[in-house]
Image 1 (tube, rainbow, N blue to C red):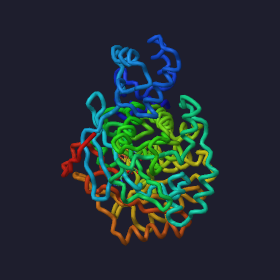
Image 2: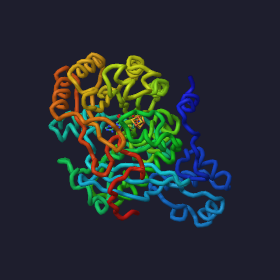
Image 3: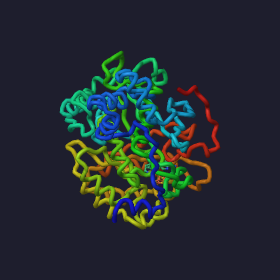
Image 4: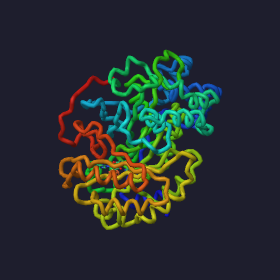
Length: 450
Ligand code: SAH
Ligand code: SF4
């Protein structure tokens, strides 16, 4: 079945694209814009660099373009079209949740987690290697970092962009913007943060434990809107990636496609955004996409030459329980999904992450842990246990700490690297499954935007 028919079957509305937004355009589209305006090709390159490297917020500020070109672009109705942070809440743990408005007024949530949430540990990504380094596996970390090969940048405008992506040491931030990152310095002296990105306005998958599901599905985000959330957050935090200018402390920005929506039901835009984000200097090895298990998209993903790491929201140890909490299981069983995940060609150090939301009394008992071990036997798998985050109108129980500990221990003893995620920003509804835009009655702590 084709992806677009699956999408419409699941109640998706067609994505809308912001009229004449430059941010989001691939190099060839920028060349078309330049050609239509009678400009030489190198102007398209400059435009691309201003959009993705410098993250310009308006055409007027692109100093590399002559004034008449900027005026010409504006006269033709071109804008940068970045989404805008219109509201922000800051958690006691440093996490910031942003309400991000698209040019048509629709909003999604994007989360900034200084120090990350521990979700990357053990998946073989650079983020994981760094964390392991901090947790005592430093030699491995260095070895992995020096061996790391980043494939050529498909969306790279120029060779120096590809070089920038490779130049991890050049990923820098502006310390002035990092006042909230006190908890994420590492012993290697760099700063790390994870950005959690939304892929859709709402979600059609209807997992029973998830607040985003309550929104229903409003629309897909475009690639520019997905990558644009990252640009907006990096601008707000004044993070410089690989610019080499004003270098202070290098930063490590990791991305998780784990915000609102199901990225694999907006597959093309999601994959296009991955290339835009690479052009912004974030290698795909620092990105993880989480899916509830959209089979055809997992198969397509397995064939991508350049792709983020995969996380599958397993969340149950058998189909009966999974159908109850994730109705999408009726369409694709756990066995079918695992077979597809097995087809993913993994890098030497790569693991597939299985997320498992622990719901008290439903999927958190020893027999469930035994079933998970049986399901994952022989796979290069790691498990991220997530203690269910409650939300208004959702009738589940949190697991007891003792049940979490037993579950965790059983998986470890069964040979599966297992991590229990630090819940981030729970007090501001910024934790997993708590993203629901402004409809959540919460005490929003306003902090200055822009
Ligand atoms: N739609 C994708 C990605 C967004 S959800 C997916 O479902 O994988 C990201 C993660 O949050 C998923 O693993 C999901 O199972 C988990 N999640 C959803 N609601 C949650 C909640 N209330 N508490 C804890 N985790 C939750
Ligand atoms: Fe959608 Fe993921 Fe929430 Fe399920 S858990 S409703 S797939 S956002």
